[in-house]
Amino acid sequence: MNDEILQGLIQNSTIRFAAITGKELVAEAQRIHSLSRTATAALGRELLMVAMMAGQLKNDTDSVSAILSGGGPGGNLVCVGRKGPFVKGCAGDPACELPPKANGKLDVGGYVGKNGKLTVVRDLSLKEPYVGMCHLISGEVAEDFAEYFTASEQQPSLVYLGVRLEPLSGAVLGAGGILIQPLPACPEENIDYVMGKADAIPHLTERLSQGESLRDIVLSLFPEGGVAFTDTLTPAYRCDCSRARMERALLSLGRQELNKIIEEDGQAELSCHFCNSRYTFTKAELTHLLQEGAQA
Ligand SMILES: [Zn+2]
Image 1 (cartoon, protein in one colour):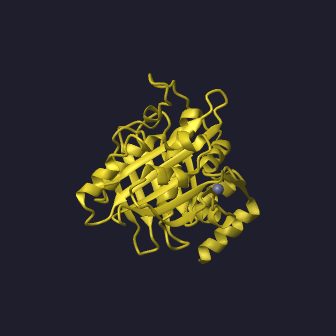
Image 2 (cartoon, protein in one colour):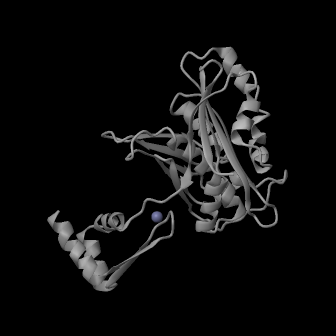
Image 3 (cartoon, rainbow, N blue to C red):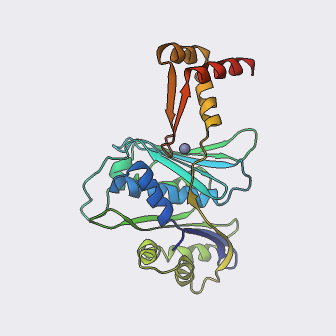
């Protein structure tokens, strides 16, 4: 089954939702970064969330970034989403593995840590990007994003994110998430209706793993909720790095630093944190870049 995001409205259009199945994009992140099981679950959950948020972007130059910095052994987890939606992400320590929790689940909260914050940057092609943040609740990702929407964007939200792995091989069996947000003036009883589904929603990933379609699951979650689907999107893990972008990164080091690289190293090799692509610049190319940069 292919990755998909469904957007829509429930409860007489008083509540909006986005739901995602993202097995392929999480598996791609796992492959690129050789993620441990715990890292796959942690970064996977964040990628699913950022993909749903990026599904709301309107312009090609818009982006949304989320940085989880919880002080855990996994280091900082950075995900960026663009219109498409296309997402990319990286973890500070992709190989770090932790023993499972007492209930057998992967210790995502332990990997991320909870002594820190979640920062969200929404760059909507305006003069200034919107930057919001909140303190982490548990490092389990979904709870932290729910806190972010409520505390920083004054938008109470129900967030579920899940990644299921094959116990022996660690292969991704399923990855799913849902974001539910009441619109302004949503009646209290409609919110209560959604909250009543809090026990059923966490079965989303398990049901996706068993081959049920996202659409059928959403319809069965809200049987009396009058589900109206408004859009279907195809999310994917895709990096937007380029040689031109790496040139700008080199120039941003400054003339002095660039001169030092030319004299001491005679070349520069940069690799992209998000897709591991390598970019090599020879001495002649660096010198040319320095001259061009000086003119610009
Ligand atoms: Zn890249």
